[in-house]
Image (cartoon, rainbow over all chains, first blue to last red):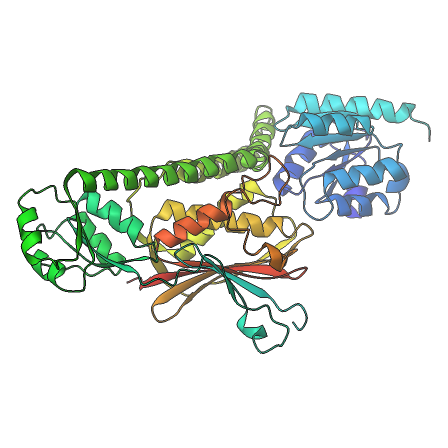
Amino acid sequence: MSEFKSGFFVGGDACNGRVLVVDDEPDIRKVVKMTLQKAGYDVLEAEDGGKAIETINSGENRLLLDVMVCDIRMPKVNGIEAIAYFRQNYPRVPLIVLTGFPDTDMATSLLRQGVVDYLVKPVEGEKLKAAVARAMEQRELAPL
Amino acid sequence: MNSAAPQVSEQDPGGRTVRRPSPASQEKDSVTPMTTTHPTDVTPTKVAILGAGRGGTALLDLLHQIPAIEIVGITDCNPGAPGLQRARELRVPVVPHITELIQNHGVQLILDVTGDPALGAIIRSHARPDADVLSGSASRMLWELVQHESALQAELLHAEKLAGIGSFAAGIAHDINNPLQLILGLAENLAEETDLEVIHAQAADIIAAVKRTTGICRDLTAYGRRSASHNHSLIPLNNKLDEALRIARYAVGFHDIDIVKQYAPDAAATGHPDELLHVFVNLITNAIQAMERGGTLTLRTTIEQDNVTIQVADTGCGIPPELFNEIFEPFFTTKPPGKGTGLGLYNIKHVIHQMHGTIAVTSDVGVGSTFTIRLPGVTQT
């Protein structure tokens, strides 16, 4: 739980919200985390869909996790399965897909399921931050 | 292993499918009886090939695969002729003197592709009276037909390979866009970073990510290129299996797959490296696709006396015994439209037969499948 304690104030800035980054590549988690932390977010990491589900079900995350940024192609529980779980059990958490493989059919289907943004790697830091900021706003609007 | 004893389907070099129970199940009463389709019980025609240039080599490559033909020998006045080397690889006798070849060995058909008009008289005076002779423009036409057929086979193999590369898109995108995401993120950070130590570390990360990406292009250009038809060489099989494993990852997601390698050191065979790579990629891709919910992929090489054996085994869905005869047939596929050409195993069989080998499958529904390739072996030195 050290991650979550240390994340509340980043670089002296007040926390803008808590983001869960789900990707099987440690490099991607590292760089996305770096970008979002600089924007004042508290960032948690998970290496696959199963770990993402574990994370939101642990401790305060049920209430305090604001946004999930999720890859699709992952081992064990993939992004599609994780997204279905989150939509079912935590519909208040806006979901952003960040994938290496642009697929129009999949994007359409995910957006229909309530995913708020579909980003394709490599995504610029500004775009990623803007997407997360928009998702944060939607989160505030979502009924608790 | 009692009621569902694994079945074996073996394709011999003549393309006949021989289906028989595996050795483990042969003692049971309920075994499937041995069945052979297209039985060829006729005594093979004994053929002698005169001339080991391009024509002789093309004939040799085709005729040695046909069970109804026995090549009793090949000869050429030029000891460096390419067909003589190929004959040694295929274990076809190389006979130094033309008269010795056509007088002995009970030759029934003489194929003269030398184009030398003077040979006619020699053949007439030394061959058995009942031996048939094909020479001049007739033999030239024969080898042109053979070459045409072999070019078509090569086209088919290449077309199937290219069709397969279409399915690499997701894997390639994943493997290129992930490093690009890292590179972009780090570069954006470097634009604002002031800590020299961080700058050095992140620049090193960028360089490493670029190097990983170049490996993808190297693997794929090597895989996609058109094979030169007679580029035979010594193939280190374990390296080739490792290379195939890297390429197969583009075609299918290796999620929850354990990989077990049991390699005999220095396992090697002679043949066409690009074609054998294609065979391995295909077998590995099939194996992974058979294990939708994960499993174990085993790659094994073993050296027996004169043979080398390569096995690709999965713990996937298995193949029902009634399909054993069909899986090596052209256009047979169990994949949905657009996902498979149905030419994969057919082409594999062709490549393996050209290498003078056999391919067999053992399978148990719900337990897994093992494809076994047996090739004439050579030991690397």
